[in-house]
Image 1: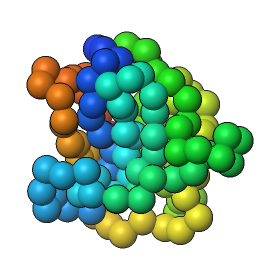
Image 2 (image 1 turned 90 degrees about the vertical axis):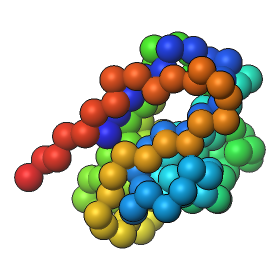
Image 3 (image 1 turned 135 degrees about the horizontal axis):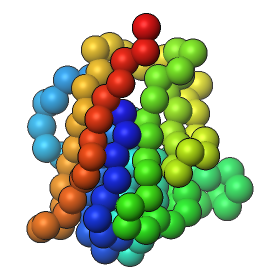
Image 4 (image 1 turned 120 degrees about the vertical axis):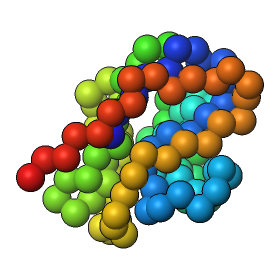
Length: 119
């Protein structure tokens, strides 16, 4: 699945989830956590992944209209920002997966979300 956002000053999470059990941050199983300060985190449920390059939970910054992609490839979930792979899981996801979101700031946007299934 891929998406953009119209702003970099609101807090939201978007990615893939195994079902939709609620609106909280832990319900998105594989998501980009876009913070209202323009920073990006990667979430696997409630767990924030550490960026090995920095030793922090921050995976860079984002701007309006950046393209985010969460894809299942070779039984791994891969996270892309503007076409560049930034993280890959080490285990396969549980299926079925659907687009899942969590919003924390009024008027936060997720735009152009689309899912493409490759046979």
